[in-house]
Image 1: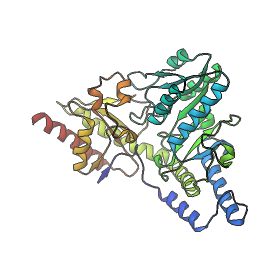
Image 2: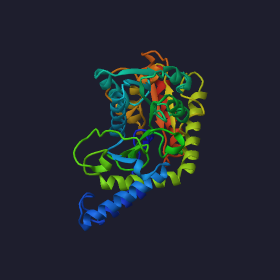
Image 3: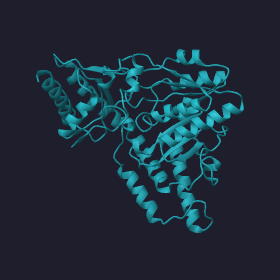
Image 4: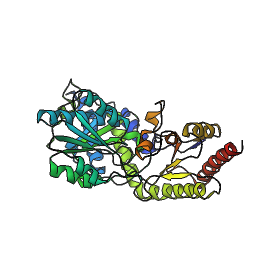
Length: 380
């Protein structure tokens, strides 16, 4: 099997597995308990918090452990909306290509009386800062723009957007789930107020994530109960998940430069083979330079991404027709439609996302399989 869907999820790194096993072997208790087993658990949790913070340019107090990126996005958006409403600010802005965790939450907030503005990106998938500047209003409470798009791999100018928002009194949240562990990310350097991340995107365990929340910004909790996470997220923490996530991120950051060079070379090789074949009009999507190294997004001629996915799967190749979280959603990709691609064509998107374990031979095999399917369909 050739696995080239690392944007959907990544294999658990050995460093994460070892850290989680060591955590289990320590027989920790509940981090909130006062006895020795509880204190041992609390120490492990805080060590993970410090390690995670160090890897993303944050302080330990800014780390709120969650169950993943979706919860982190919900906590950020609902918390910021509540703060805004209390100050008479009920306008929210986001890009039209956000993850469904953001878009669905905004839909719910709109039903609750908030005004929502969705901004389309340019044809290259980059949201112009000028568009955000023009949309900001006196009553804007929050702007949410992802750091890297999960379907295109395109990077957004989040640091510039954060400066714009700060000058206009609005909060800036960035969903960095697809970027953390793939490219250097500094919470302090970006200047964002909130940042979401998820462990399974960089070799950590599933069911673990975090929201980075700027010191001094006191979000109301979405989950109520105990006082865990400094009163910001109730519920006993997923200790093994936090430990594994911190270990995975440290390992991913340590290998980042080498891995980026490797997967970038594979992506370029794949694109070169697909785009140079005469008689097959495949379109490469997204910004040519401002992007994650390992994601390649294509628009196929005359075939849906779903059909191509199934045909490749029969050949032992795992890729994606779009975001894994949107699988089963009816209709074309909202990301491709936001690029101005007609709805019928927007169903023809295909994403190939490489990881450190992929090889040149696998990239070549993927290219030949895609071309073989398309050429076979053409002559059928």
